[in-house]
Length: 296
Image (cartoon, rainbow, N blue to C red; front, side, top):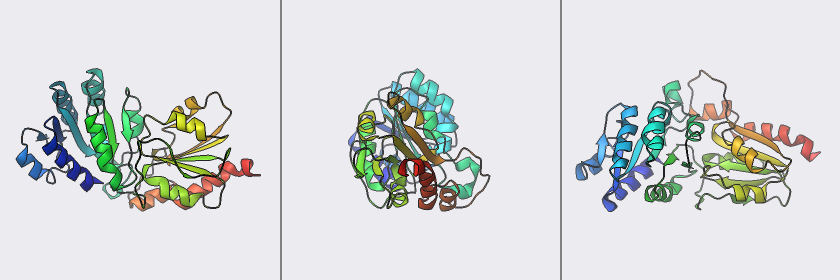
């Protein structure tokens, strides 16, 4: 996904003189050729993530469409105050593009883990959040975000589904178990794990790569009594949205994602997926326990 982002963004810099990229050393070498061609619109501020966002806010005030890029914890957590003040408070838009996701760089330790990023963005006003599940979903999402005027967060990962599923981010039914069946909503790169987890169960599975704004109409059309959220970031991040959307209906909600318990481990991304119960076996255990009363 990272390479696809760099290629697409390089094309956008050539196509649209309104675009600019702001870096904090991460991916600077990959953007080197673009920086030579567009030295006034590819800016590397060094390892200063707060400045990264501040510069993006300043560029937006001049009428440019800035794209700020770094690892998720550096871009969102470390620079959260600047996102809040230099973008939201000033009423200007930018596109934030992260790599690393929740634990892609687990071997680098806690500094590189970013499971709380979407929850933090969710405290801001009217942001669009894209969580692609395959590299081939990235170009269209990036181009749409850059072409818009508001603020958007594009969360890239090394995790991936086997195939791309392109649409506007509305809930896309991948597996239909019929009216009234439990509904599982899988976000981004966890779709394949979720499908494997519910093999043999009467569960409808829907996919989205755009958790914000969440497809409320689609959710209400598909949801029965049981709803399961499978998200590749902090568990429960979308519980508020789903609860509000279904407030007039009796329903049960299971939220599965990265645990709020601090693991204090290194390991690989695959290790963390397993430790957080987000592999197919772990998801199946949680889903079986949740659905047991409904399937009796």
